Length: 387
Image (cartoon, rainbow, N blue to C red):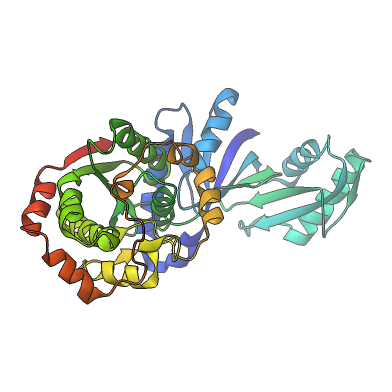
């Protein structure tokens, strides 16, 4: 009998003839997560296992696997020969210290096993009751479940609990995107959600030094490092937006400053995305949350992007939903550190909430050599690798 961690994947079952592509990416992610830990990995048909690990690193292995997109769940299991007596002895031992109602679930992928699943479950239930008089059968709301997974390779796995993993699709299976990473609560959540759908990420951060501090930049790099736990290695492009903001402040209607700023950011985002072979732009906008995120404002800023889609995975969430996810992925406490980002510089008293595209274009036209300013931002950006 061997103690193993039994791993299950989710949506890969739906991929048909393309399944091998997704599975290879998933296997690569698992290997990367566990590369520095002494353990053995086996990638069999429909089931993956981690074995030959020391008891003291079990929690570490589990916690790392829980961050792998594409994995649905895992269990601490006992692997035995697909022999009824070996399975029964393990199941009885597993239930020995339990109390209350229980049930037995049997999955028989190995059809050469001589007993059908219902018969295995019934006989195991009887053996467990004989070995523990503190238990009773409860098929509907059990306190404890004994699961038996009989595989085609002659092994069977006996386990109790299922531990949820991150779900989604393997990172890299959906291409690459550029995340606008501001330093607030929303944008890391947006990056997490798109990585969950298989997107590899780079990030773009605009700063306005000296109006914003070095601590604000460090905060963003910390957020990228925390996001990397789920999304894998990424580069953060740090671009100075100071001269652009000063020009907007000098020449444009104050109430349109935020909208014009967002338009320039989106134009630069597309330029950086294309230069880094990204197929989309990702941001943390939530409809109606602030003045720059109304339907009209989003429509105007969308016109600044010519060739790439803009994904807004937080668009239908309220703030508490976003905060809940940020706590889950351990970015919240970093996001709320009081270091201002460039979006807080030169804030107008009454930002327009329903801008028109025509008016915004007139405001942009007031800025001398706007294209030259954007060229400078692009040319002087710093790229930092988070790996």
